[in-house]
Image (cartoon, rainbow, N blue to C red):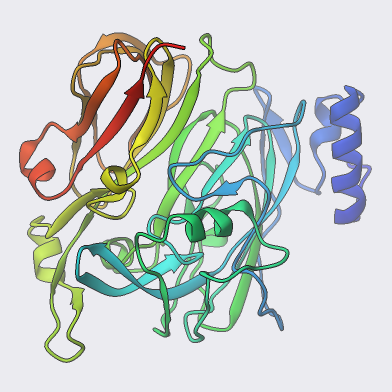
Amino acid sequence: MNLFKSPTIVTAALAFGLAAGGLNADDRLVHDGEFIVDGKIFGLPEARVYTEDYSGPPVVGGYLTAVPNLAELDYEGNRTHEVRMDVIAQQIEVAPGKFYNAWTFGGSVPGPTLHVREGDRVVFTMKNRSDEPVVITEPVAGGSPFFAQVQANPIQNNQPAVSPMPHSMDFHSGTVAANDKWQTIPPGATIQFNWVANYPGVYMYHCGTPSVLMHTAQGQYGAVVVSPKEGFPTEADREYVLVQSEFYLTEDEYSGGYRYDHAAAMARDPSQVTFNGHVNALHDAPLRANAGERVRLYVLNAGPSGTSSFHVIGAIFDRVWYEGNVENEWRGMQTVLLGASNGAVMDFIVPEQGSYKIVDHEFADAERGAAGTLVAGPRQ
């Protein structure tokens, strides 16, 4: 029975009831038409498309971070998350001196990482602001931790741009009718919809507007980490998010910069392959750990078309949970193969003090930039 009608009352009731352990399974159905199968919620309400006078922070939500950061889930039980990621255009750099006008969620490539728990509900809002310049490199009130992290590590040299274009959002972590929730909206429009984190994992989100190849290669992708309800069987000392992706850029004689090359994208011939959106992202700001620590990597291969043979030189992955699901456990892996949009959670023990290279072991991609470093200090 659906007892709640007001979204405000729903959110408050869920936060109180779930934290106190006072809601049963049926009480989690907060909209008419929702139903539960095997403990998972389906049948979510239709998306709402509307116009709004909003010019605030393009990223809102306490559990949205810039790679390689992952927000801590500092709450018990399940929660309803109010999340905003607006579409904006930004000029970004992907290699020294190589910049282009990217289409983004929130202003960076990849976009913000969202961290939730299995069973959480997300109320997602996205305004298509591709027709207005939006600055993300200045202090912002009311936004998310994402902004301070981008400003602390300005490797992409983000600058506002304008590139009016229809866009959409496709969360691989959501189980919904794609023709409704993932529908395309024009510049100036806003879409809002619900999804429930029914399955744990490391998931991709991306724009699903044709050409999907073009919109994804232009920069519209990021990661959602859905942590298992009962957690992982090991406890990590350090946690990092890595998103591998390809860029297909050619010189633009008109702007003096670079532009998307669709022929190269169709031929799967990238100009750069990166971890976290820049060939130097994990060299200029290497990952840190100490000898003897367990490092946990949440790795997503965003593609849009290539595979990744993910490897840390000098380490062996003690545990690997393919797609981030504890039911899919491997042990003692030297390399983890990830197709386009596949993810995994990978644990390894740092064996000694030193420098550990992170690479795509498909070395043509490593030569194009898919490489980084973890610097390990002495055992504490």
